[in-house]
View (cartoon, rainbow, N blue to C red):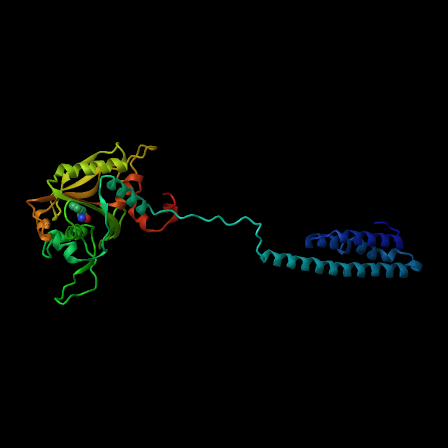
Amino acid sequence: MDKNINLETIDEVRAEALRELQDISSLSKLDEWRVSYLGRNGSLTNILRKLGSVPLENRRQIGATANQAKLLLEEKLDHHRNLLANAKTSSESEDDVLDVTLPGWPLSNGNLHPSTKMLREITKAFSSMGFQVQEGPEIEWDRYNFDLLNIPSDHPARDMWDTLWLDYTDKHGNTPMLLRTHTSPMQARIMENAKPPIRVLVPGKCYRYEATDSTHEWQFFQVEGLAIGEGITFAELKGTLYEFVRCIFGDERKIRFRCDFFPFVEPGVDMSISNFVDPETGKRPIDYNQDWIEILGAGMVHPNVLKNIGYDPDVYSGFAFGMGVERIAMLKYGIDDIRLFYSNDLRFLEQF
Ligand code: PHE
């Protein structure tokens, strides 16, 4: 700074400061301005500091002018700071007002649950073969879930289905209501209310009193199939199921039938299909050591069941099958844990 402090220097500094101040529109710039004029090393501060070197005769006047300039700049600083602060709050409150020109939030469309999708695919495959679709109650009587299906209360086969019983006691002291353990009770309900020929498909939720693990859930979907008529044979059952597997899995997968026992069919079988091989890795994501995975139980409707409903087994015959929907989805898409279906994890659900 000029050693010779005079009135002009002070005027210049003041004028320059006021000019700069006009263009300042942010608090941070305002602070820079303050530092450069009024700060410890600011131009006006330096003038004041050097007043001592001004010849005595001028000192009074120059000192007074410099102090006035300082007061003026401080006053302008406060004023400008208030201006900026007010401008800020008013623009903030404008932000609260709805700005219709802003881009909107994208609406995320939901998609169907993989169980529902699989269920619909299965239903479609069977409707193309002439099956009608009918649903039934999830809370069922013991009579339909077991008795009419040739599983009386003392039958050891009841152990096959771990049952969730309902807290309801009839006048004989029995607890005859339960959450259906399979969709098979609908076999009896349909036969009671229809006349052959019957070709019905029953999709629905089932429940079992079971510990869960990667292949067992206590709630799951089943699809039951029932065909009753005159002269229906096991060949028709096999043909129907072959066609079903072809519709869902394509021509690639193989099918295997083995003898199995279900009290309401005779003969009874279970059907397995060849395991899923991931086309990209050539590996099996589930059950690595298993070549075959069981997907359903089936068989020819037991004569006792026909009799229980009042059908003459010498005239009518038929087949029935029941399959687990989630298991089929697991096999189709290579899902390794059935619990994913009911854990509501969007990272899983959004893949379908
Ligand atoms: N209801 C049987 C089960 O849940 C499956 C089945 C249905 C078997 C129809 C035979 C005939 O295990």
